[in-house]
Image 1 (cartoon, rainbow, N blue to C red):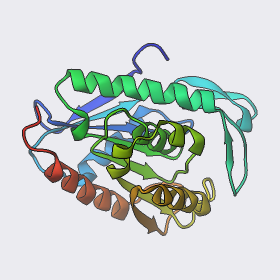
Image 2 (image 1 turned 135 degrees about the horizontal axis):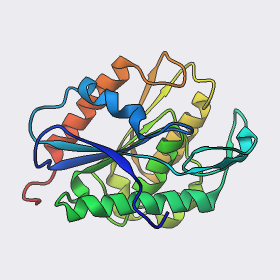
Image 3 (image 1 turned 60 degrees about the vertical axis):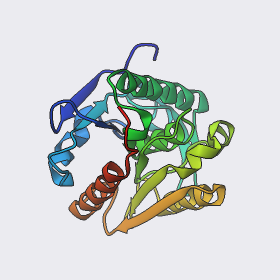
Image 4 (image 1 turned 120 degrees about the vertical axis):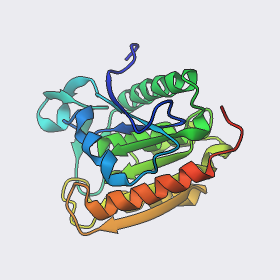
Length: 230
């Protein structure tokens, strides 16, 4: 992952002042969440750049070694936990940091960057967002879990604790059990993180009510951005 990840980009207005980097789930690609942008109800200004990167293809052990887009390998899984490749998680976090650095070079500071992700992408959003050298504007973690708490503990700084987190899960999720999402929520709250928790009567997916709640949360982040930033 030395090269910048390929990505789909969508801007809500010229010269966007904010960026949302949105990571897809296992086996999907960056196009998966492009259609949600109009459903978020964001204002015409300030402009937001949405970046939807494509994960690299790799064999996934828990799926019989089938090659598919993935942020890291999952060795085995059950309803209580996931056994994930920590080296792969760390590599994907570095790839996300490179995307963040590109946004910085475009004039968008970390204080105006939100990292979002669904399922496996949400696991990377948690890990990369909570260990970034500068605190981000927020983290959106959807239908996901904390894949490697040790990586978070090793890289999290005191100022990362103030990063607002929107975490959501479907109560009928049979792919990533709701208990895994709750475990992540509780573990992060125990560490001092600010987690806003939401549940919806849905399977492993997103719903319109959830998107509206995400939109309201994002509008609050836009309004809360520090004054005077470039």
